[in-house]
Image (tube, rainbow, N blue to C red; front, top):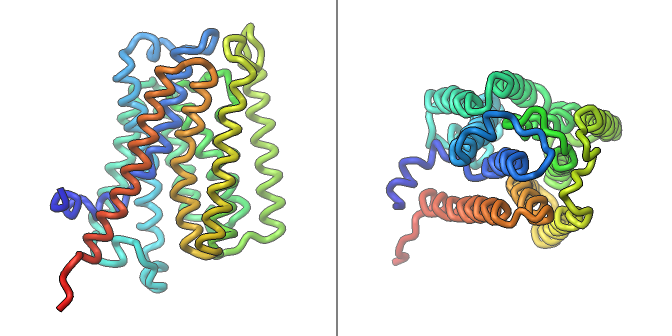
Length: 327
């Protein structure tokens, strides 16, 4: 198995597919929620096609968009990473060629568009818009923290709606949008990344988050059915479970900060675990709404994501620094 991981390691490092399980979880949640929650808007393609087909489409879109952004980031930052000698980048350390990175970017985008075809023309157009937003973020947004935080949170909220653009219940989308902004802000600040978050950038990001929150609220109000903003079939106690996940993430940040201190190592861990944490929110929403079977499916995806992320990092360590005997 180590042989195959060694062969696939450059592509896996470029695309960060294991961290992309968080993006997949967001799409799977919308698919499962739309199919199981009464009075939720259910497009014909989600109700008529088999569940495995819809989940396959979500898998392709989620991994495709995430891998597109990850590989594009390494490609656009190539000269800066080479100048700084940034570790962990496969193009810089020579494990991946420039040609492979270009193929990864193109292939990931095509995979995302292919997955979007499962959900209709609107989903394809939204996927293309998200790809442009990801390009703007990697080319400009990440160098302007205020704009970058807002843009990334909008990308996370937007990609959730690919399977069901007309989804009515917007609170889970708002939670993921807010989570994405908090993660990038903490990774930037605690990770001591450059450029630092200035007071002006923090104010801009806060205002941008407020505007986006109001837009989601207006969208939910415009789309509300007979149930109103909150589905009648979902007990209010369902809020407890996502709230627990939020508290757990806060405790995770505090513990990691005490253990590693501030710096690039902490920032990398916040970004990595923060990207996959939304799968836990999906489990919490589904379980709180009484959809136990769907919650178990999401829990399995979460477990696969966390285990794959940890296992591949161990394999990368064995590849980069093989275990040997000392004489």
